[in-house]
Every structure is written in structure tokens, then in C-alpha cells.
Amino acid sequence: DVFSIEIVILYLALLGLSKYLSEDTFSRILTLLSVALASILIIVFIQFTVDDAFITWRYAANLVSDGVWNWNDSGQRVEAYSNPSYAWLAIIPHYFGFSTALFFKITGFSLICWLIWRSISLAKSKLMASLLLLLILSSPATWIHTFSGLETPLFVVLIFETLALFIILWN
Image (cartoon, rainbow, N blue to C red; front, side):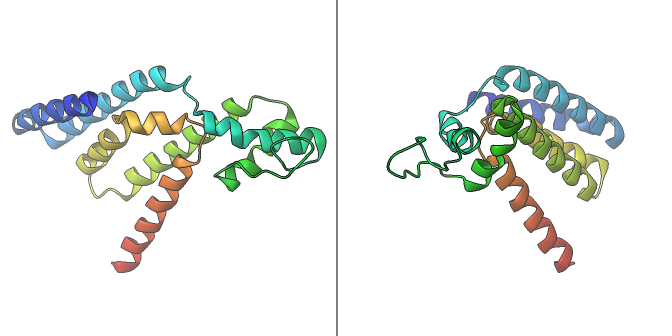
């Protein structure tokens, strides 16, 4: 997409600039750029929720309100959700009576924060950490999926942790 191309062009321009900067200064610039881009993307995408998430959440709502794990509170059994872990997790906000969408936006954001923290903690240098930040934070896809209400952030974190474990065990 166009935004990603612009980020690559900006990164290449910064890479050219890096010849004239210390690694520490260049890392700081990349980090500031990453945070600035993430802030803009969060503002743009925080209101976004995928309609499939509402399908999933309906099962939890029916369980809490009617004691039935089904699309409708009565009638033929229907299974329309694609993410059982988030369907069961949706019981929490329904049970306590707070916004399910907000609950999963916070969940997604927390998982991305975990991904960022783990990426930085595993990076071998400040420059590598800054590049990982830029990669994660500047992608619109990161923020679309973070706030979608679906299980994508959890899936990404689980894949990342699995790969990190393999790399750690390999070394």
C-alpha cells in the first residue's frame, strides 16, 4: 500500500543520513519516527472493529444473559464464530457489563505492547531494536489488526514467541 511505500522511502532517506550520524543518534531518530507514526495510526484506526468480532461476541453475550452458548438464545444450534479463544474471553466483559469492543481493543494493544517489549529485549543492539520498532509500529496492518477485535494480535505474539524460543534453543 502507499503508506508502506512512503515508510520505505523515508527509511532509505534516513539510511543515507545514517552515514553522517552516530548509531545512537540514528537509533533515537528511528525510535521517535516510529512512535510518531504509531500515534497517527492509532488515532486513525482505534475506532475500527471488524464485523466478525461482533459475531463472536454474541455467543458470550447469550451465555451470560441466557445461559446458552449459541447464536440465538433459543432454537437450532449454530456455530458462526471462527475464534473460540476470543469467544470464551468475551465472557469477561459481558459478565462484568463493560464494553466488549473496548475490552478487546485493550487486549490487542496489550499484546502489541508485549510484542514490542519482547522484540526490544531480544534485539542485539539499539539499532536493531529501533529497526524492529519501525517495522512493527509504522505498519497500518499492525494497528488495523490490533483494534479489529479479532485474535490476530494473539496469533502474532504466539508465532513470535515460538520463533524466539526456537532461536534461543538453537543458540
